[in-house]
Amino acid sequence: VSDLPELDEGPGTALPLRLPVAVSGRIAANAETDIHRFAGKKGSPLLLEVQANRTGSPLDATLVVVGPDGQEAARSED
Image (cartoon, rainbow, N blue to C red; front, top):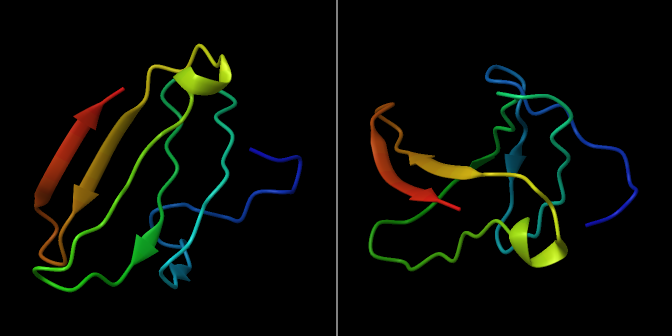
């Protein structure tokens, strides 16, 4: 969590992230979505987490991983 400005992370404008990486984001409105892209390798483990509750945020986050085919590969409710 930081006061640094957010990158543009819309559906068509999210820049690819290079792993390993930590991303700090801010949700300013109901139903706002942050989208981040990264290249994963099948069989390689990843740790993806939302730390909102641990920092006292009231955010009720949903984390969704979508594969290159556009299909949902994983989902976690905060």
